[in-house]
Image 1 (cartoon, helix red, strand yellow):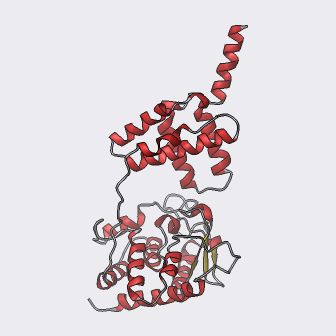
Image 2 (tube, rainbow, N blue to C red; image 1 turned 90 degrees about the horizontal axis):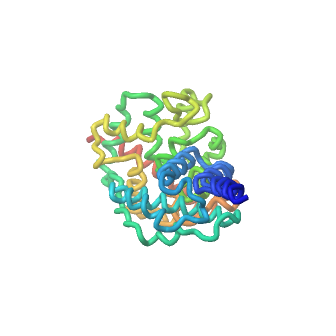
Image 3 (cartoon, rainbow, N blue to C red; image 1 turned 90 degrees about the vertical axis):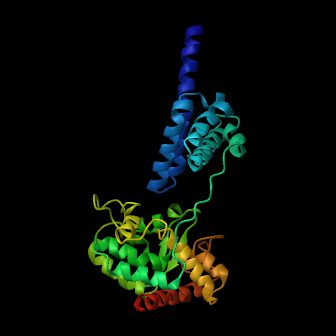
Length: 316
C-alpha cells in the first residue's frame, strides 16, 4: 500500500513539475494568445536554461535558492539581462501555477532585487543631418538583395523597432488609408500600434509588392519565404556599406528620428513619443481613430519623409 502511494505521489509530482507546467503555460498563455514566434522561441529558451536545476522538481516544493542558482550562473558569465528575463519568465510560470491551484506562492518574485541590474546599452545612432544624408545616399548605392535594399530604404522613414519591421506582413497594411496596423503580439509593450505611411513609403511598398507580394512577409527570409528575414540582415548590410557598429544600427534609426524630430521644434514631444510607440497606447479608440496626436503624426510622417529626401539630395 505504501509503495502504491509512493508511485502515485511520484506520478503526481512528475505531472506537476516545473517543466510540465511551464510547457503548459507556453502553450495556453503565450501560443494560445497568439504571441509572436520570437516570443515563443525565447520562452522555450528560458525554460531550457532553468530545466537542469528545477525542471523535474514538483513546482510546489521549489525554494527561491533553487531558482537563484541558475540565475547566478548566468550572471557569472556576464549575462545579466538574460538572468533578469529568465527570473521574470519563472515568475510568470509560478503565477500560472498559483492561478491553476498547483502552487501556493511565487518564489521567483522574492529574487527580483537579488540580481545585478544590467547596464543600459545605447544603440549606435547618427544624430547629425549631414551624416544622415550620407547614410541615405549609401543605402541608395547598396548592391545586395533588392528586398534588403527596400528594408534599408523604408526603415529610416517609419522608425519602428527592427523586429517590428522584419515581421511586417502584407495583411497589416491598409494601403487605401495609408496605415500600417501592427498587432499587439508584435509590439514590445504588447499593445497595438498604428503607423501612418507617407507617400514615399507607399511608393516603396508598391515596389516591394512586385517582389514579395505573394508571400506572407514583406521581407521574407532568403531560406524560406514563410519566415521573415534574419534579425542580422539590416545591420550586416550597414557593415557591408562600411558603417561600423559604433556608427549606426537598425535600432539606432529610432534615436535618429527622435532626436532630429525633437530638434526641429515643429512637433509636440508627445506626438513623437507616440510615433515611437512609447507611453500609453493610442490604438484602443477604434479602427481609424488613433487617439490624440494622430492627425499630427500623419503630417509629421510626411514632413519627415520630405526631410529625408532633402538630406539625401544634398551634395556631400
